[in-house]
Length: 97
Image (tube, rainbow, N blue to C red; front, top):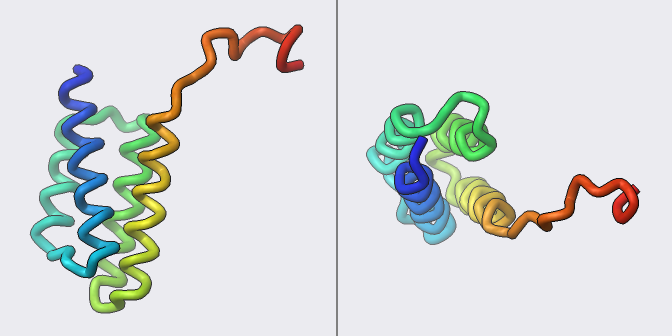
């Protein structure tokens, strides 16, 4: 998986999350996001898991704008946490126990 492909999925997921929050998400957007994710990401990727859950839940709650906005906010929050940098010494037991 190249970083360009990962970034493409991340940006598409963020766009879908924002559309869901704004009440502008369509079935086609959800289908495109699901297809792109399956095509570009590996099965064990955390982003793949978050997007798969989002796609499934969107298909269930597509007619509930409040729940859809919550799902979009959750996906955007997940993507924001993926953007946080990892400390270079995260595996040091003398610092982190």
